[in-house]
Length: 111
Length: 118
Image (cartoon, rainbow over all chains, first blue to last red; front, side, top):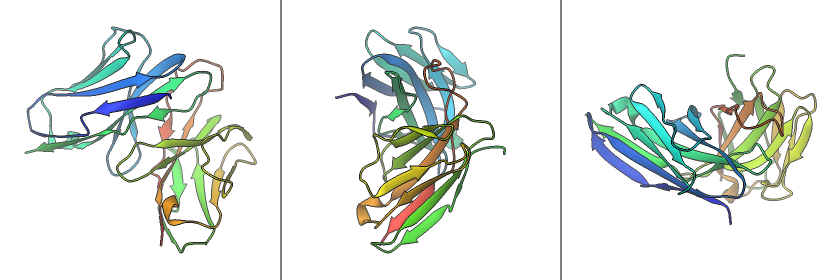
């Protein structure tokens, strides 16, 4: 059965810490992997990854995909309280355009 | 509009009632998706439209769930005879992607409708 698994389920850190969130997947005909940040409302897009080994970076956030080992990581450096959210990983596969999501990682950053 | 909008933002229904949830996608977006997000879980796919055509409804959990997008813009998700297990946030997303044209365009999500069935 196709699936997307995120770890850890939740994480509590202090401001300034660096965190690494994990997403592993098992799907047929993988096409792309996306990361979203969800606070109390709409998931907001962070990154889309399609190629292995190419890091995508936006400010303190970065992400990379390993298509051989079937996982991606999302790194956040120098965390701030505003980074507190649920981080969702999703995969597109086969011919469809729908996203299959993992269960999310809930990150809490304490001052 | 500036983004995807959904209404109502919150809906409380008594078990057995019918509900209708509305989604206004970003203007010009071809693709529209509905997802169901239970508390503490990731969103799960329900159904997908390309323009007015419903191309995939494999995620609809039962025949009580029905979605339409008659003019290829606004979409409505209807749930008949609601049950407690229908309680969730219903997210709508749109993208400019057309099916089979690759996977470059991300989906933009609305704020969701939180449905509580008592």
